[in-house]
Figure 1: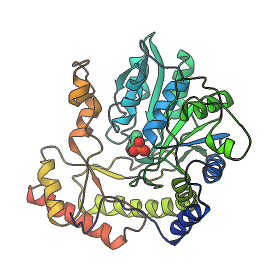
Figure 2 (figure 1 turned 90 degrees about the vertical axis):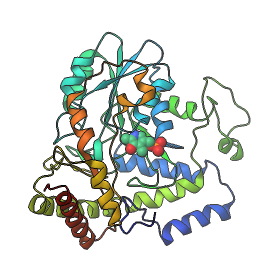
Figure 3 (figure 1 turned 135 degrees about the vertical axis):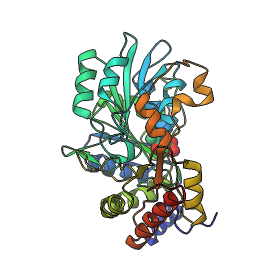
Length: 382
Ligand SMILES: *Cc1c(COP(=O)(O)O)cnc(C)c1O
């Protein structure tokens, strides 16, 4: 499809090209000094002690679950309104994801009340997901977790650069996981990052990232080590220096790009309210500073979403759904079929995501909103 306005787009330029070329010319492609620098810079940026780069956010989530020693018999509370990786990572360990509802149509992040209601004596952890880069209610969620002595993992795939009370999202829980997939706020192709303030967890995560080995090839290349032991059943979840080099440049650009997203989001809010009063706009008011990863809207009840998205498509505008709820997927319905998440159900049925990326133009935002209005009119709705 040749979209006039795609849903998301990368911001890659001469800086990324130069960074990749430098790595190529150096001749060391796998995890090495570029990755080390990327980790240090990301740790400093998020204000945390340890950052561990990995091959993608799904691997990060898996390693987080492993480092917390989750396994068969354990339950982990997760949102259903998320990308499937949030729950899959739990299943990789043999633990069971338990789905919690979201707060409201205005705040489609995981509900602290429903988290509390879903806690059993088997609950070992909670994975929160900062939907669209807007903060979950971390003070309340951490208080609940503390009270029940369970751990919090943050799926911060949407949220690099986002904060709550001045503290980076991803650094509130025990471990935070970020994604650098091509459509995320920082793009390296595949790529991800773990952050933690806990030294012991950081060591464990590093070790599990690379086969459970006590040293990596880079250490031996540098002459810092000559052999290794294997102390855990680890994985190969390493990033490489080519991607790390792109990531370092993307991190430099992140603040400015998130600021552009913020401005476009403000424009969206203003003209959506004015021109399309029938749609609901999640996160119209929200605490903290978002990374404005995506712009969701909720179509009016009775609107045919497929028809709406087709009308947008005919105008060359790509839209998407965030998300088909995880608990309704075939492979998840094999488990508990009685799950009832009323708010998730409403949002998941009516949500459509409009394009948002740093170099989207204000004129294009106007076009998108006007097309939204026309598409709803086709269905006699506004
Ligand atoms: C993109 C995404 C992931 C997975 O990230 P990858 O880097 O593609 O593995 C996980 N959770 C959420 C919420 C995401 O949006």
